[in-house]
Every structure is written in C-alpha cells, then in structure tokens.
Length: 469
Image 1 (cartoon, rainbow, N blue to C red):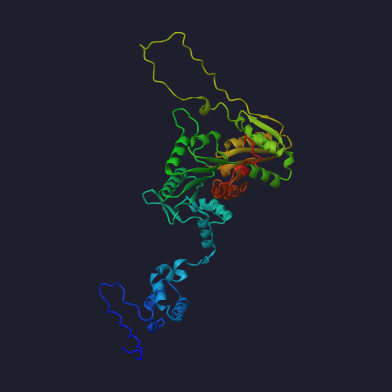
Image 2 (cartoon, one colour):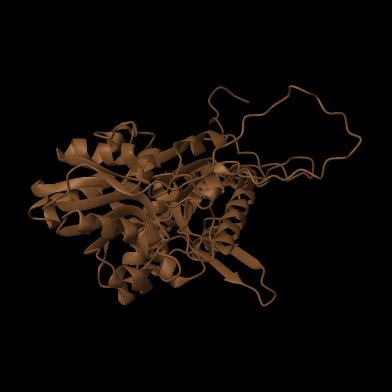
C-alpha cells in the first residue's frame, strides 16, 4: 500500500451467531437498539394480566399501562428491561395487592367487633337462655365491644354443646356467666365453654361469675363435702386462669383456687342507693338479722354514720350447725371398755328468745346481708322490728336468689322494699312482687375487665372497702 493511498475504513464484523452454549444472545449495537415500549417490552401483557389477577381496579391497570408505554432514554432499554426482569414479583404488583387498604365497618356491630379484635380481647356469654344474657349485654355496651359469636344449646339427649364461631387465638377471653335457677346446667356451660376456648389457643380465659355457685357449701357438714373446693378445681382444669366474682359468701373461698380471684364488693352501690332513694335515711339504723352478719352491718353503719342493731336468737343453735349427725354402729358386747374415759356431753339445745340489741323505735330499719334466698328469716326479722317500733323496713343484699315462694312472702310481709343487684336474673320475681328493686352493677364489672386486660391496678375498685365488708 502506497503512502498516498487512501486509508480504508474497517468494516465492522458481524456478530457471531448465537451458540447454544452461551446463556444469552449477543447485545445489539447501540445505534440499532430500539426504544422499549409496551408492545416491545417483554412481559408487558403478562404484567397487565398479573395486575388484573391480583385484584387491581381498572384505573390502576390503566395507570400501569401508561407507565409501560412511556419510552426510555436511548441506550437504556436493555438496562431497564434487565431491571424489570430482576424485580421481585411483589414489587411489580399494585399496592393494593401487597397491602389492602382499610375498609370501613358496615355497621355499628361490626365496628364494635373490629374494635375488640384490635384491642386483643373478646367477651363471651356462656348462658344458653336469653334472659341470662342481659348483664353480659350491659357490660359489653359499657366496654364499647360486642358479644363474641358462640352457640350454647342443649341437645335432645340433655347434653350441653358449645361452639365458638370466631378465632380467639392469642386473645384475652372474658366469659360472663350468670347463674339461673338451673345451677348445674350453668356450671356445665361454663366448664365446656372454657375448655373450648382453651383448645382454641386463647391466651387468657377469665371467668366473670358475679354470683359464685355452691358458695354455701364451703364448710364440712356431717358426712358431706366441700363442694366449693371441688368446683374450684374443675374450673382450673377446664382452663380458667382468673375469676372475677362479687361478695363471696365466705371470704375464705378465695383460698380454694390455684389462680387469682378478684372478689369485688357491691356495698358502694347499695350505699349509694340508700343515700339517693331513701330521703330520710339519716333517721335509719342498720340491722343484722343474726350475729353472723354483724360485721357486715357494722361496715355499712360506719360508712353511713348510722346506728347499729343486731337481732339475737334468730339463727342460732340449729341442728345443722351444732349437731354433727354422725351415728356410730351399735357397741359390741365383748368390746373393751376404758374406765375413766368420759367425753363431755352437750347440753340440751334450747332456742333462745328473739331479742333486738339496739334502739329501732321510730326509725327506718335497713337489714343488710349478702344473699336473699329463703326469705322466712327476713320476714320474721321484719315482724320483730315492727313490734319494736320501726316504721319502715328495707332489706338489702347483693345476690337476690329469691327461690321458691319468696315473691309472695315478701308481698304479704311487713317489708316495704327489697333491694338487690343484678348478679342473678330475677325479672320474673319482680313481676310477681313490685317491692323488689334492682341496682345495676355492670359498671364495676366492666371496669374490672378493662383493668385486667390492660394490666392496671385493681386497688381503685376496693377503695373505701373495709375488711369486714
């Protein structure tokens, strides 16, 4: 090649053909790389199909199409396509598929259920009768929640069946159980529901039992048994981890349980009723119908700054309390007799005359107790108070069982008014006797539920409560 010859421009070599051994085809020359578009971008239609499948709306899908139709700068198409191929599938989907937006509740009941679910607790009622769920509804209304979805019913063969209709995993569950006249059925409903919640992986199961059944059988009598201790063991075995109750018949019952028991008091509500509903309560005297109830009556009298009277001789020296009732087999004739072994003999039982210790003449007599079941003793106490000069007689108690013929006896007696709380349903008795009044205690029960769930102190609920109350 001569010195003056023109220099030839080298001809670009053709790209080598694609070999099966190379994983990717050779890249195109820069001047020949087309700008990617939706029709040219590999997988564009696939992305649209995935978006529609993930539940995106038409507007979101159209926005995705516009983003894919926009051209990219020259020379960046292969890099953009590579980034799109390497992008995770979740990031390619619309935001709605990754994190669904908040859906407003469709009604007040759904709003209450969503609020309780977010708070981590649910409230259930273990009663199969509608009349016994009134207290549970009042409590849930104060909590701003809704009763949990469950079914409690009796099968044709008499067995109790409980079905939980929603998830309770990892939540605090409160079972509200009011005790109707059929005590044994109510106990089985509570046990079966607690066990069903335990097997459903509930975190804590708290029983709200305003009136604890079998509390009168908390002492050994004759050849009987301490049934209250047996019931405490059954509740622990069923899965309960805590109990909220009110005015136990004996405070020692708390020691029967292997888990915490909060024994609330209804006396502040009854004292408030006395101050608001009895205009001349300053002229009243608190009466204990037996010496056993003297401490409770003294607690009321101290907080109301009133006098105290005790009816002596009404429920003393009864055969149930004094006679053991155990009879030994007849003595064998050839048995060894130990001379000098003399056991002290009990004196003959004589019921002392009924007397009233304290002045009730010209005053209002307020008899206080924890349970009103058989009202014969209250009617007899009212008669003796009338004879001693009391011109009005009120009977106040926490639990109004009002068994048997109690409404008729109250209506025909000298008692002017019977005030009880709604720990036990007694709507039928109120229809039979207008003298029966009810004080609502759902406020303190709902506050106890809130404090236990949030881990707050319960001391506020026991303020102004004496040891003898």
